[in-house]
Length: 500
Image (cartoon, rainbow, N blue to C red):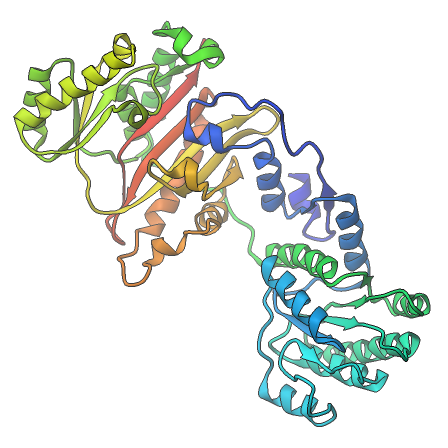
């Protein structure tokens, strides 16, 4: 809370040690296994606008930029250099760390051509070639700074055989100062300028001149790009509006409390199968999960339960074909791993056979005693599969996870975390922060999903955690995100509560 407030006016940069741990606990949920030891810290920094660095060197590199230059208003970088190789390396480093190397405006390109030799490249990165003079650096920095497609300028100098590092440094300072003065006079946004002076010969006096001009200099293009990317991310956080807490009125918190309280006092079944985790938490039964989710407005398909092949056939007919049949067990978390899921069952005979097949598979594994029956559920064929989960970090409390769902979630690891409680902007950001978020908008002609309903589902989960701190872990996986306007359906779920 303090960091959120302070970061609005003064940047906070941190380096965090202890990013790994030797023995991760055997998590019983997808969310628990994917929430590495660093997930909470990373999520907290992102939400609070804290600039996180990986090393002490990066910490000082970022501080040097923040102390001397304005925070960029966007990720677009204009690069000016006298050597093509470092310019390309800088472009690669920028793109690799979330920055953009945009095309320059035609007017900027024409102005650069007016004084650069024919062999020079006037595209971004601007390669003025080895013959570039200090005056070339001054003009190029000023022109690229003024380009409306650019949010920050990086000047790279590689000393040729005959070198003038002091004059080049002074020229870069003059070009940046002139551009900043003109921008200020016309009410335009000030942009950061940073440099990279490579090599050792005669560089010291150049660095001294840059320092006097408040232009940070880095030994390598990659160092400059990494620092700029960290600060640009902070700039994006500053530009974003502050989120607000959301509470839904159609909640039956007392019903949820009843379900949780009943589960918390229940003696565990086959506690040894869950290992150490069983000593502190109980997993809810399917009927309890349905009641809990319904209390918070989370929709599930029509469902029922059975404890024999005949009951399974009868229940399937009552629900309506096709159905999915899943193992019901208080100790087996991942049903697919033990052959405990049969999909698209279309007749009563198939339903009875599915029960017998699940039972036989568990018998082969020596775990048939852990089967308490099966849960039947109406099949939901359409929709995009995602996962929403909850796990508790010992230091930071509940973490909310979002990602593309299904049985491959731990394989792809395309997930993001946020620290509870979530604001409306947190819910929107977490959905868009995974690599595969484009599928929700409709990828290559495929139908998109109801993103607004998905964000509301995530906020309802956050409200559930706020109201009921006894919830330890949760996996809503998969959730089917239906077409825009049709909402979301939780197809499968696992929830555990703290044992009394």
